[in-house]
Image (cartoon, rainbow, N blue to C red; front, top):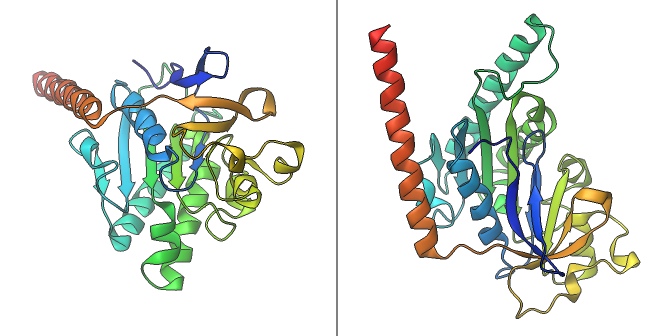
Length: 267
């Protein structure tokens, strides 16, 4: 699999498959606790983990939502704001180096044929790092780094997938939301929270995640193709599914790394 291949994320209200292309895009996932946001984020990470051309940078305030993928990840960050900031700074440096490469080669974006690995940055519990722990200065710096990566990373193969169970304007300001081409809102407590994820004014047009049945976990509104929110049911991976896929992905990644090492040694 390649990150340039479409990602299956669920089915629409007619039972048709919903596929998204992640390359050159970011995805924002929000909803109240239990809405299914972490399940959808795990689907995104699982797809990337199986891609031969993609590295994983995982940041998880709770550790356990993305922790099952840590053996597949190049970097895994738990509830440590300093480590999260250091990781985003390193990712920012990688991004700048790639833009230098594109400029030197008179290019505007990387392509599938390039020998450049894409990077999925997945952040679960965005509010933990941007509004809960650390000083206000550290929180703002983390948010600024994430905003910069979301704004400039797409053309150089860096994909930002951020999720939060606190979809409020202080966690997802307008300047950040507009950087996410794909947005998924699971059930929210009110219309304003739904609009924070999807965009201002959608609730007034009868597109509000606050009207989703709280017992229907995984249902959400996806703003993607066509520019109008669509009702869909997110694909679900059980804990057993995640472990099975993560172990397989870790195995093939180790095998690939050993093969590359052998080829370099032979050269």
